[in-house]
Image (cartoon, rainbow, N blue to C red):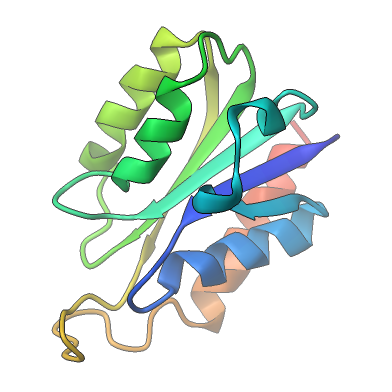
Length: 145
């Protein structure tokens, strides 16, 4: 299976750690959203979309990329890191992907250290190795479906 993972991570780089763990487990191509173009998604069977949570949603750059694509009739999995991982953060992204014809085949939520300006106020030390192992297990499970 040909897999592409597109992600946005900055500040504490939590999402990048999860994206890399998943890509390693799936032998996937990994792209930062700022390096991805709509045409990049064409040659893949499965696409992963990941982000930290910013103001209650996936990063705006992911929405901008996906909005440029008229149809994305692909299997997609979502993942995010957040101070308080919650399925509500995925809702706007799931709605956008459904409008493009995508099928969501999995969702992974991971705690991530949250904070600003060098301060961390929740989930210090996350994602940790146990979190990354869960991400690898999740990713391998997608390949066996």
